Amino acid sequence: MSLGKLIDKKYNDLSKRIDMQKVPEHIAIIMDGNGRWAAKKGLPRSFGHKSGVSVLKEILKASKKLGCKILTVYAFSTENWTRPIEEVNYLINLFCEVLKNEIEEIHQESIKLKFIGDLTPFPEDLKKVVYSSESLTKNNDTFLLNICLNYGGRQEIVKVAKELALKSSDGEIKPSEINEELFNSKLLTQGIKDPELLIRTSGEKRISNFLLWQLAYSEIYISEVLWPEFNEHEFLKAIIDYQSRNRRFGGIESLPTESFEDSQYSS
Ligand code: IPE
Ligand code: IPE
Ligand code: MG
Image (tube, rainbow, N blue to C red; front, side):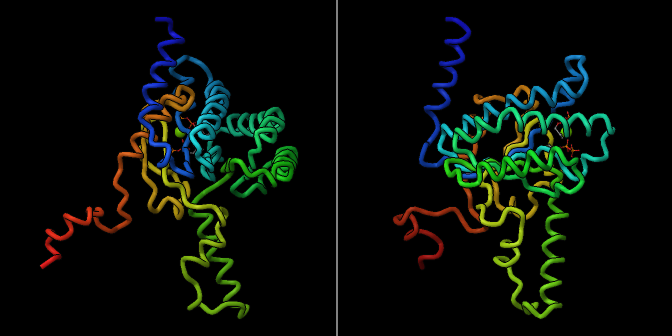
């Protein structure tokens, strides 16, 4: 069997195991491992970042194909500014270039693009292409791609706390009116449902300041694969694993009606 046919067969075998009724609507991804992938190949870290772009395109296509509706990806954290300036500048230029090259296709695919994070410190040319991409795609409703740029979960929570404290001191709201719903409505992700699934590549088992509020009850899948080597096949494995989980949200596993009669609560 040729390599191409073998890959198709592996894909078909996996995709058959997916329950299309239980595909997560919103998937969040920490795309990690670019630098290690490049180092493994004896290449500069920038090669890893560049290679990661085509992986994102593949995963975006795969998500749409499965019927998922929202993808939120971590592209640059508030802590990533501590990297060498050359790497930071490389990433900023890469975001700019990729966005310019891909925006037409993204729009044709009816994907709405949204950037989440504080864009203020970025150079004007990146901000310009970010705002024009958001405005061009704002009415697209097939799929939502959120790109987290200069995003930090703690900073987001502090921002909301400040906003609500100000409203309260101005007499616009009472402190007693602050609840989860109001807090949620002020987050950068307002109006977007929380991710059912978080995927992190490269084997790291941490959240690294990503969507701290929104991930409260997300299922977490850690892939050992470095982001530039991640692909549709690995993505399907994450979905299959997610579908095997028992999401309890602090409750108990739901019991079929007949066995409920025999349970410890029926006496
Ligand atoms: C993720 O890959 C991309 C960004 C954080 C921008 P890394 O650059 O963190 O790669 P590793 O983790 O050092 O291998
Ligand atoms: C998280 O990865 C941020 C992004 C993927 C953009 P990092 O590589 O920055 O996280 P740590 O340093 O391993 O926690
Ligand atoms: Mg990393």
